[in-house]
Length: 121
Image (cartoon, rainbow, N blue to C red; front, side, top):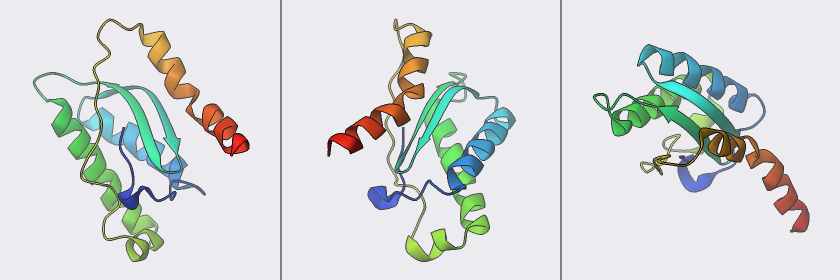
């Protein structure tokens, strides 16, 4: 999971769709298997499988770097509003013994649960 700089809600209005395309495209190039993904307005959730020889840090760094470069070129407003697209940090947790279906369902339900939270205020 990672966020745009200042946790701004900029992953909307087509940027979210384009980001998904770019992540899937580039992940295939670096042999990372994206098993589930949800783009929220202010963060990205991804369940991915990464070869231990490649490493999760390198995978996340590569995905963030590539998507930042392309999105900032395709959407000039991202350049003017922020010094960089992504924060330097990210959160990683291993799945371990948790069933993959449970993790996938959690990621799939992110947008629904956020809408419910927004309604409650």
